[in-house]
Length: 353
Ligand code: NDP
Ligand code: ZN
Image (cartoon, rainbow, N blue to C red):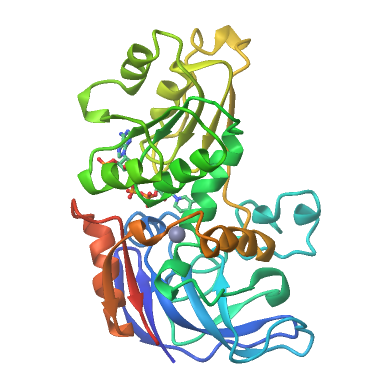
């Protein structure tokens, strides 16, 4: 079978591979639509997961089941399915402890295009099919379904980590597709003021659509200074970090109220340490919590998030700015993600009708 792969750090191309083997609990799936992710760019061009040779890329798609193992109960060939980017081993101790994303190792629930071939192949393997697949509702179009693999659950996980409550004033740092879903999630959870940080006009427009009430640019000076000015020096209740650098944490701590919480879903690609400003952290006693997490993945979450879309409470169409038809366009979509032109939020490739 054919797949679009990372050949080595900094190099991509089409390769031929053997079809994956389907174990008794597993499924083989062919993509219907797929999307590249900022994480694919980190993987190939920044060596984020280390050196990988001839590894098929991709972890965002929806697909059609082609084969299932003999112990799979709820899925059969021909089913159209949602596929989460994170596919935990649900019988692991970590999953039992409530951290399925770290099943059998830190971040090891992330398998596609990390420990094994990803979804940019003619076929791909899904471990623990009953625990990780979900049926694609008829009224969700495949392109939008791709946003349920990673963008929605990751953005929403930032909201969970920050523990957004009714009426909270929330700062969302970074309004690429992940941060946009944090805005949408914070809005659904009843945030009052949502201050969004980002500059691309298309993202600012989308953030407004998803519920942001105020906007600042990190290019206009320190984020914390701007937020404190806007909040009469008091700061915000919650911060979600979905963009920026290791230094962004210091800003987040500075503009957070005592008792506030920070939820980080941003990938920290460089810098050895995250610095926490001593005084603004209440000299160690400010009750300012910082949590960072990989989204949990799995079937239940996919089913629940998909319901938000199918009943009309979450419109994913605003995330998709570029559409391609045909598997061969995977490369174009990935390169677009790498270049991040100003009018891009997410590109999607429709592979099959
Ligand atoms: P994008 O690159 O599309 O968006 C990044 C956002 O951050 C943009 O709004 C950008 O602003 C803003 N930004 C850039 N630099 C700064 C800065 N110095 N200070 C504040 N804001 C800044 O990324 P995605 O939305 O696709 O992904 C966001 C992050 O989430 C990535 O690091 C990605 O790897 C990570 N991720 C994490 C996952 C998880 O499970 N934890 C899963 C998927 C992704 P501008 O408008 O100027 O571009
Ligand atoms: Zn992704």
